[in-house]
Amino acid sequence: MSNEQVTTNTDGISVILANFQSFEGKFPEQAIKDALESKEKITPHLYEFLERTLVDLAKPTDIEAISDESWYSLTFALFLLSTFREKASFPKIIQLCQHEPEVVDWLLGDIITEDLHRILGSTFDGNLKLLRELIENKNADEFVRNAGIKALVLLYKNHTLTRQELLDYFAELFEALKDDDSYVINGLIGCCCDIFPGELYSEIKAASERHDIDPISIDLPWVDRIMAGGQEEALSKLKQDNHYTLIDDPIKDLESWACFRGKPEESESNIFYSRAKSNIFYNGSEPYISPNKGIGRNDPCLCGSGKKYKKCCLC
Image (cartoon, rainbow, N blue to C red; front, side, top):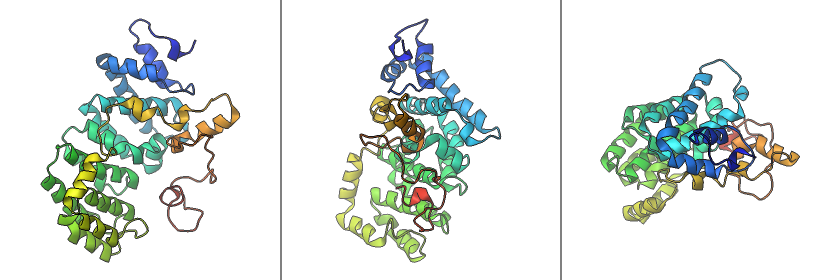
């Protein structure tokens, strides 16, 4: 009988934890439901998953030596702590995010671009200084820094930050990011457009004139089109944008991940699972096998663009 089929023991917590630590090829829906119903009892264990990861990262080790169980349990911990609005986890998540880019990328994969801003927004403890440190940390992964910027937009949408607070910081950020990674500056401009860029148009134009932005991803004519639509239209789109929502339903967020649709005992699915950490949101019906297998997300792209693979042909 699998862990998923067991419904009870002493208090059920060990069963839930077993499902969160052992990948069996299918989505542990019942374990998540049980965890949601056992918030007080399960939360200390979720913190333990997060803290154990931080302890492991403090040791000099090959990142690939980090076990699949650690990655798996960390994933559930992040989504459940977010659902529970556990503010005490926010500094720990910030600490995790500021590790070497390769380490964070290995542990979080596509969570960085899909859900990290929602995790940060859902656990936010009111400490803007910590979030700003992450955003302005030039040694941190640029995708992680962008998630920090997007978290601020989410906090604005949910009335945790005022528009003026957000605009004031974004104005400071344009100055702080001069000569920074163009992807981060592009992300900032994209977030400005999400909230309507009118008040920050001069900063955006100056960044464009300095060639701080990557015109392949974003350019001034696109910003002008947002401007032409007006603030009411931009804010209406933001209100309806499900990408800017707090995490409330971990089952809905996690059940479609590609790694839960394979059968580990089949050879093709083993290939599929081995790539799951960097391709967990692939939604095709067949196992995903990357045509560029072996290329790291931070390696130069084979197309010759000069960009990192994750910022070029991986997208």
